[in-house]
Every structure is written in structure tokens, then in C-alpha cells.
Image 1: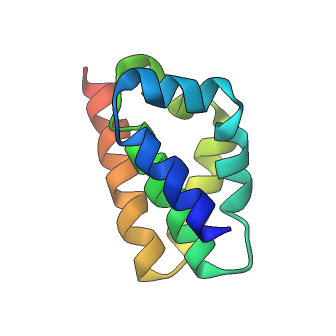
Image 2: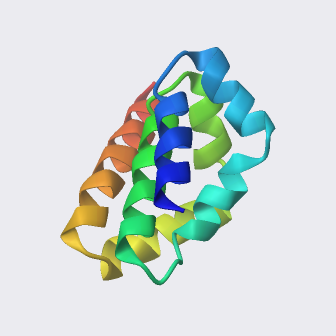
Length: 102
């Protein structure tokens, strides 16, 4: 599973169009579903990928930050997960803050 996550994550680090194609395929819900996975490495990869999505354009960031369920899940991880996962959550929160500030 981790190699597949890493591959999708690498696609998302490409162009906005590549990211949009992954998002159009419905991957965002899957990434958020993996945040509850029992293996820390899977949660870490999912967080890394989400942090890359929120480093994208305004529309891509908006897909994440306007969904209350996503925000709730991320906040719960901040309070309960490992340092490895937390560092990617910090990247996500930085993107979120930048979007709010405009």
C-alpha cells in the first residue's frame, strides 16, 4: 500500500493538472480515510500527500479546507499521533493558514 501512496503523492507534487487528475479520480476521500489506518507509516504517507495537495492552487486547497469532516480528522490527529505524522500536519496547517489570510 505504501508504494501506491507514494506514487500518488509523487504525482501530486507535479503540475496542478496532475494533481487535479488525481483529485478527479476521487483520491481525496481515500487519503482522508487512510488517516485512520492502524499503521503509522500509512498515516504519514497520507498526511504527506495531503500536505502536497494543500500546497497547490486555491481550488485544490479549498477542496480540503472547506470540508468540516476533513478538518475535524486532522485536528484529532494533531492531538493524538506521532511526531512523524505531526510534521506533515504542520505543513497542512501552514497552507490552511495562508489561504485564510489570503
